[in-house]
Length: 334
Image (cartoon, rainbow, N blue to C red; front, top):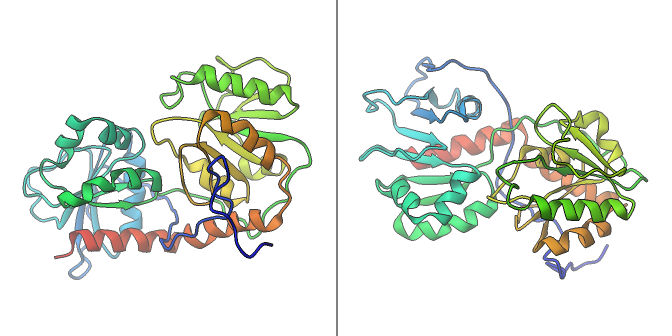
């Protein structure tokens, strides 16, 4: 193993994983529409307001914060929020004047903040105390807001991950996962480019399992090729030994749960334009296939273990609970 590693190669690839001091983890809890917790001494009390699509994630954030912090959560803001130390808005920007608030936009809402000045102006008009994002890439792009008094931090989504004690061995077959589905908001503008890349890779003898978060196989709009297999949602623990990594070419700050899960099993994950710890970053679409081919037969067990350990060290249930509690207390502490 060399003593010194270059930071990047010609494709912008981080050859050595970046360790993050921040702790991350996950757990899940099913809660009611508006849940009042029992008083715990003089615990901080927070209101979590979710959008139509983020109820489940908001429930899990509430579970992370309890019991150290009292939490209520709902879709509709109550008439009086004065009893709360702070309000967290998940994928919404309806900040009220004088109300201590943190925004937690993920994916598309964050990308919209970056791209749309009017939308950003609405989000920061009443001076939220913090903007949290679910990727380091988004946090980096939003740091421009710090000079106007907005705290910007990476706060991982409350994922539920399976973290093995050791990495399963890499397969000898040339087989990878590709995360994609037709008419997906993150890829609809580049579907033809993705089809060309899949076709070229399949022609070279690489078998591609096309997966998504949907239960049914991804067939609609998929290139027909003997080496391209529509899979849909797969049972990762029981199929991971058959693949060496995953490609996820998308736009709009897309960065999903399955990436963390594959890293936990020591598999490589490749994105375009997304720079995250232990993830391969291609600087352009042209760089994707050379990078896939270079990692296809990766056999360095320490690289796989490095990825697994990163997840094990930072995404334990205890670590993520502490991270969320610490951040909320710092933002809303009096």
